[in-house]
Structure formats: structure tokens, C-alpha cells
Image (cartoon, rainbow, N blue to C red):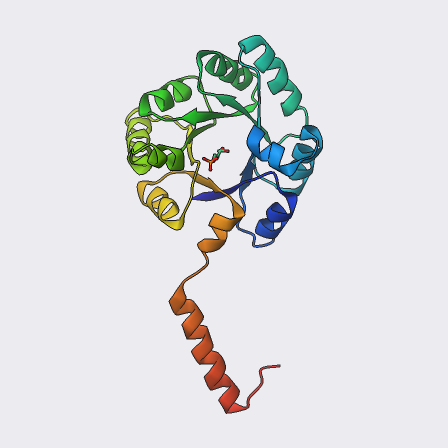
Length: 217
Ligand code: E4P
């Protein structure tokens, strides 16, 4: 499974990238606002830092303007995935951009039927938001199971990019189901490294090693 970072914070991206485990980045207008810098400057910087796909989100609601925005975003770098919302105009834009061989991430997906439409429109990635689904009393992971089943039934190659990931259980469930990508903030990705038994085991080894008086170097 691929790991994307869901952020526009270049420091977090550099830290995650240094682990060698980062496969891409997703951004959205709220994350750009948090970064507090020019959209094109931030996206270009991220795209130069990361080898994998970097999602840049369009903001228009109509197909014509969204298409213009998408083409402008795609010009920033060859690893840009244009992010469009799961609306009629968003999927029209998805189809048109895919015909030009531009990667497209269809965002704000909350049902398997929506994911089916996105796959038929040729989306490179579909972004179902599991955390926000949980927030309103649904089980976000059931949505991922349904999308996996539907895509496998018809052999769609649209990648399931699990979004709005809040904690390690979301990542584990995504991997169990066979989702292609999980995108999360660096804080959530950091938690994947942690286990109390790793910490206590390390402490015990440190203590015993110190008692031997040996040194490897
Ligand atoms: C995905 O592309 C979205 O940017 C993101 O995962 C939304 O997460 P949130 O629900 O934590 O804002």
C-alpha cells in the first residue's frame, strides 16, 4: 500500500520523505490556507520534493473553468494529479483531463455509487473520506470495502486513495481491505511507527548493553 502525506507543509513533507516511505502528497484548499503561502509556489515546491503524485485541487464549480484550472495546475510539474470534486462538472472535467493523459484525483467521495461513477470517468484516484464519514455516524471503512468490491467486480484500475485518515486503525483496515493508497497528516503517519513494547524493549536492551561495557564502534 502506498502512503501519501495529506498536507501542504513542506517541512512535514521533507521529514516524511527522509524515511523513504513517502509515495505522494495530497493537498486541498484548507491545507493551502494553513500553509499561508502562494498556491503555485507551494505546489511547485512539493512537486519538486516528492517523486510521486502531488494532488492540486481545483476550486471552480463549472466544467469550463475547472478545466482551465486543471490544465494550469497540470503545467506546474509532470507529477501533478488534478483534484476535482465528485460532481457532474467534476466528472466531466475528470474525463476531459484523462483524455489528455493528466492524472486526476476525484475527491469528496462518500458513497460506492459515487466511486463507481468516478471510475467510469477514468479517475486515476478516488478519494473516499473515512474520518468525515465516521464523524456523522457511518462506518468509513465499510465504504472502502464496498468500493474495493465494486472495482474488483468490474476490473477498474482507479486507485482507492483512502482520505480523511485520522488514526492507525484506519490505515490497518485500509491495508486489510486492499486499498491502494492512504493519505494522512504527518502526525498520523508518525503514530504508525510507535508501539509501547518497542519502547520498553529498547530501554531493556540499552540497560543490559550498558552493563556489558562493550562498544560496537
Ligand atoms: C484528501 O485528499 C483530503 O485532503 C483529506 O484527507 C481531508 O481530511 P480531513 O477530513 O481530515 O480534513
